[in-house]
Length: 119
Image 1: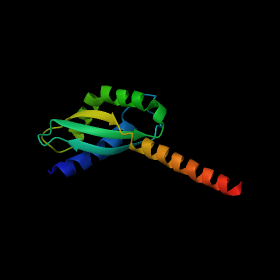
Image 2: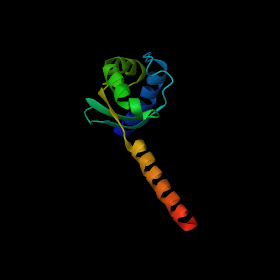
Image 3: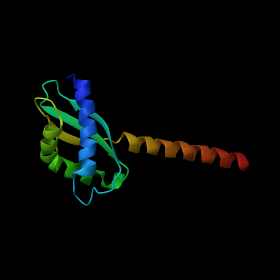
């Protein structure tokens, strides 16, 4: 199986596992997106970048997922048809948060220009 297909399948399965199998109450009903999965060619490690709707608690959510990574890996082994399931490391993807900050700055600049025109 090609690495790109493995990454795609890992992203889908990990999403389902987090939604349906992780019972930590802090993650229940939390909106998240797996933005990328990067697996090494030898299938030893996979870096999973994830963003959350609630950015204030993102660090805590990532810690929860990293603590649950061996359980997630076990479930992946049961669901996927590959010879080796990589060790999973979750990282918070700040890309969405940065985009929202940039949009807020641009919006503020536009509002200031409009206010200057009206004065």
